[in-house]
Image (cartoon, rainbow, N blue to C red; front, top):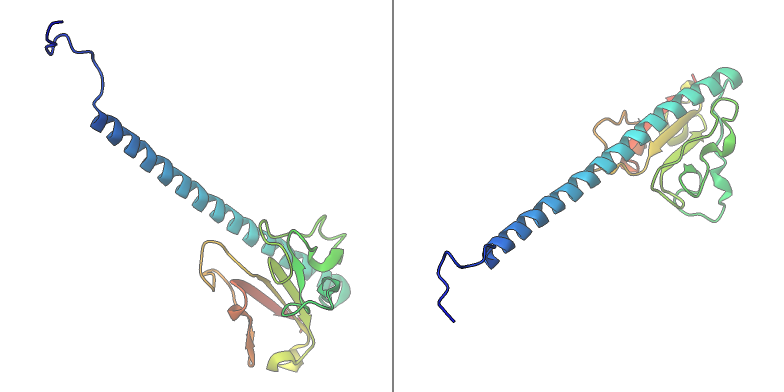
Length: 180
């Protein structure tokens, strides 16, 4: 057998060249997956905000027809703790239990949340609750428990509070409205 010289060597890549290429492909794949996940979280948050706008509009229409906002049915969860007085909207519970039927075809649900105290929360409070001015009447609080792309509170949250309670501390995005 004769000696191989550079002219007779088969063409190919060295092990180091292959490792560099594999590393670059791995890095690009990881970066793409992270960016895709961030885009999905932003899309779900955009859906949450659009859902809130729809519910607020439906609540205003309900008020126009009934001179009050709908009461919360608390999802019939007498044994629930923490959020037992809220009506919850997520994969397990229907927000307002179809009290907005005729105004909305279907009340929205948080795209990822499950169980009590997760997703969208709604409650109608009696006048004067939590130190709010009773002359302004009853009021509702509507919020999103968890926006995926921000820490509490979400930067675009309108917020809602009374002298003895700030709902922004319990939800990432929250709003409320008085009946008077």
